[in-house]
Image (cartoon, rainbow, N blue to C red; front, side, top):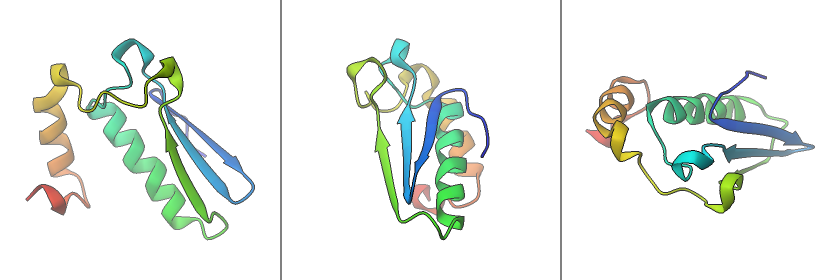
Length: 89
């Protein structure tokens, strides 16, 4: 499995758990976190031995405050240019 900076990924049997780990920003999603989430869920999708995917924001006691407003322009540009982001168009 890949290493990540802003998320923590665990496999517990057939369960895939992704935890957003940016407590200093209340787990806000910036461009790097969005990319890491995309890679993690792509891994989950390609692994037939995993049946259930769970996303948590346990770090810092917040699930997520949403998009990181300090990084919103970069987030939109990066995600809209990545493969599989047709929902932005």
